[in-house]
Length: 126
Image (tube, rainbow, N blue to C red; front, side, top):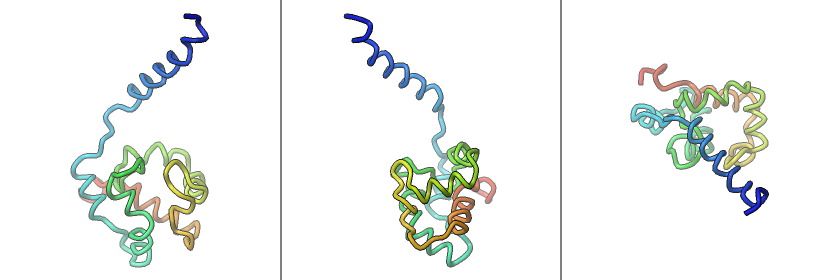
């Protein structure tokens, strides 16, 4: 078999190994899972938005969305900066639809929701 015929398989294997090695064990703890399933923003207005637009993915662990309160999952996203995160919400990213299903939200609400979801559960007594 010629090199160019083996290259796609070798590249795929290298990527799979790299992803496995870089991923480590970042599974949320039981405390984080409980926090994600049971927490809500203190503001009633923000809580209503969270419950109708964010909670389905960020509280249940049924998608690639980082769980609310899972600091390890949120940190790489936060490292990109809040403006980038808000842009990602507005544009949609991965499995998240544009505006995170909150078509009437403004940028400040998105920032508040991101801060809420990204706050590690441990910081809230979990």
